[in-house]
Length: 372
Image (cartoon, rainbow, N blue to C red; front, top):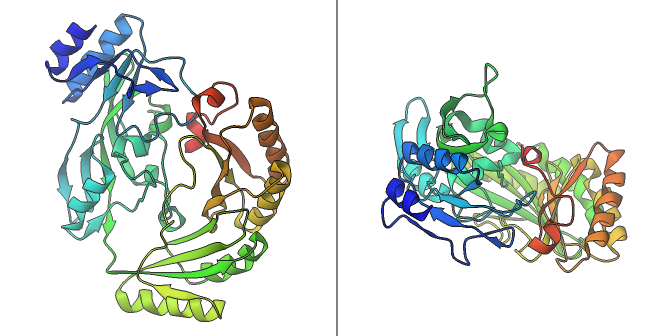
């Protein structure tokens, strides 16, 4: 296998897996780092012919999200599938290799006064990794998910066959592609001239509804909350973007509406766009209407028996709650069932996005389609 992968990728770009090359707590067999889509196809054909398994990896920031795999024989590192071309500034589109870091892409686009209106909380996220799980940050409130800005993708399926998809005519969408996405044509937006945040303390979740409702009247780009201990000492922050005068004016109007305690600043809160969980935590994603969010958070606290840190989009009702990674599988499954029962009457959803490997193999984890 190593000899074959070396022939495809070159002598410095194939190796036996190391301890850092683990998926779901289990070390992969080999790592291949192809530089072209044809090389990706050669790897996938090789893997398929041998009846083995493979998995693409960008920065690896989300490689353990969702349902764990029983094992991976070949990790396909996309680090050399990097770069942007066919950038049409007038039409607002660009084709990007999926191993490109999102931050590097944004820096290149900013030179032309444009951006991809996404802000994945994974700081090292690549374009491919972001698209694989449709990873959204605060800007989802106004701009939607990354998948909504994909015009088309080129990919190689699990049998090594190249393909292209625009999600129409029965061709697979991002969630249905079984293989490796190698490039994506993305729709861009103008870079805003100014950004202003308005923040206010939120002592309890019950206050969220009224504050969020008032903020929504001013057409913000994002409405986020951070409740570090079940709502005690929490914060609500709202982002306004656009021409400087307009952004400042809307921010100040919201601050006046909220009243005493509201603060306008050009600097984001330190928790803004950052996941509240770590690798050794359980990340529970809750999705419900913004009006019902506070009720679900109280119910979660009751089930857990103590404060639960929560962070995410108060404007959309989609947040991540943090549970201890030391919970037993039956206890975690019971919490998930109880929360889903509360959400059922509110047309909401709950899913475990990430968990330590020993737990992830024993409980129901989010499947890929739940990220879209």
